[in-house]
Image 1: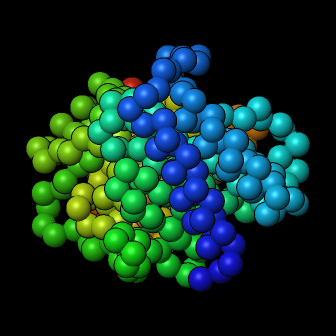
Image 2 (image 1 turned 45 degrees about the horizontal axis):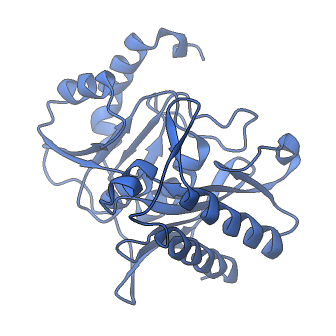
Length: 274
């Protein structure tokens, strides 16, 4: 494992500990789009950005809670950060939140860490090297198992439901559904074999929602694309993932993509040629 990845794991753990100091005692403000932000988000973000800047001064940083400088567009390597993914879950004290730090090189994720501080569970991955989970001080390699049978197990958002998700679920005749907070934790459920599929077709997902979870699930053997089957790209001028995310265990995308793409494009005609 590279020294860079170990550094990022340490930074994520420290940021998680900082966030937990505010657990159970937070007051939220609301940004555009009714998205909450708390002192925990800001404190964790400050620590992460300062630590990354010191450790990797030549790299750019894109973080949800920092001013976005488009100077990053000229950088080959960009750290993409969500200091507290699942702020609503943090406020609800249900444990379904995490710190997410990903590294994109030339628009593609190559390294990522997702840390769930409430459970003290760490997920990490590095391109072409594998993915790992560490809990109770024990580190194990992550190998996402292929689907078993034709009945799929869906994981979906606890706080960001959408009628289009329901349409997709009905198109696939899925009845086994688990709700969960953070994007990182939903992808981790697939990487560990507890779920088979995650769909979020909304246009407001951001790069910091998907960067670290993508590399972890891909290195575990799963697949991650947008809802039309195209790769997610990073370090764009507008850091949106406008076609959402489709994440699955090995073999799932081949089963579901045509149906989901059809539903998605019928509802979102602007993406037919986008």
